[in-house]
Image (cartoon, rainbow, N blue to C red; front, side, top):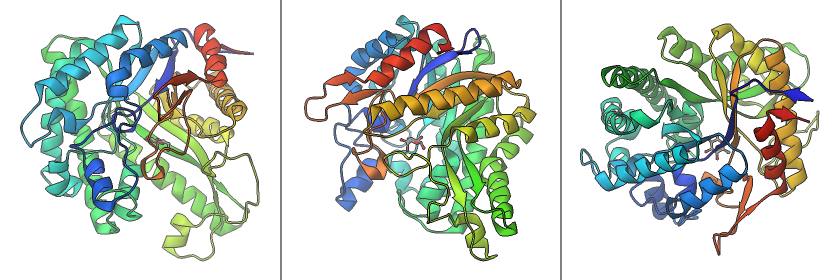
Length: 405
Ligand code: BGC
């Protein structure tokens, strides 16, 4: 039996583009259209059905919910802000508050307005100012009802997929561009952090709690040779802690938002920089259970990362953790084993304040489309009927009591 601290935040996360549907002014929408690939279409129609979805979250004893705001709905044309777009999100937040569910609001979750993408996206120096103008508009209107803010979701994942591997828009494969984008995004976060604090101060609203949602992975050497050990150490230092250290130096974080899913089994062939950074074991030398996209399930990795994060002395919120699977028993096993590891870390003095499962419901999994099923709630994409999964009910018992049996 594991008992979690009083006041622990229990809930699930979503992102606007993945659940809302019909985000026609977003660069992802434009990209899907241009490429003729699977269209996110109506997604889960959460834009219409959010009340019903929050009823379900409430019935599952969630006391918090992470959502994102679609920038392209707020600012569909450069500099022209939509009052209707804003009104919608005010209603969404109020609808959570009405149910006593704490909103955790993400300002950027992988998607940009079309106009922003067309003007060079995050490569453009102006991107930081554009992002801040949008943050200012949103934050001034929501401040009174929101305490937790995530400025940018998974900067490292966004940068690698969009500017290094070239699999997401704008499909660049350029280290030079990636470097520039990283600098702009980090700066955008730091400035947004300061801006949010300033707005709260000016409005006399008690302090906000601001972070990023940072993707972290366990890097495990496949065999204990020098190359593998060095590469695992290097990746951990660079991908897990590089960005955090940079932001910490600017004191631009009130808590650490951690997204954790899996491990990487590091198996390096040569002492080349590309191998050291990317090579993985292709032979499955240390088999573990996997999700339906083939990612290893490795809950102990979360424990180890949490212990390493302790040095920053900040509260830590698990802003995403989840599994796509057709096997709902495995989903519960996944949740349970990760919660156990979180609890072990808490026993070791790590201040973990919340756990958000990814995701509340099945949704649009980016370039993988609708096949991967991450949801606590099943979505029928023909009828849009929601069905609560057994794993969600088991999780709800823990949300209710704060105890994992
Ligand atoms: C992202 C989500 C995504 C999930 C599962 C995270 O990296 O924030 O948008 O759906 O992982 O792949």
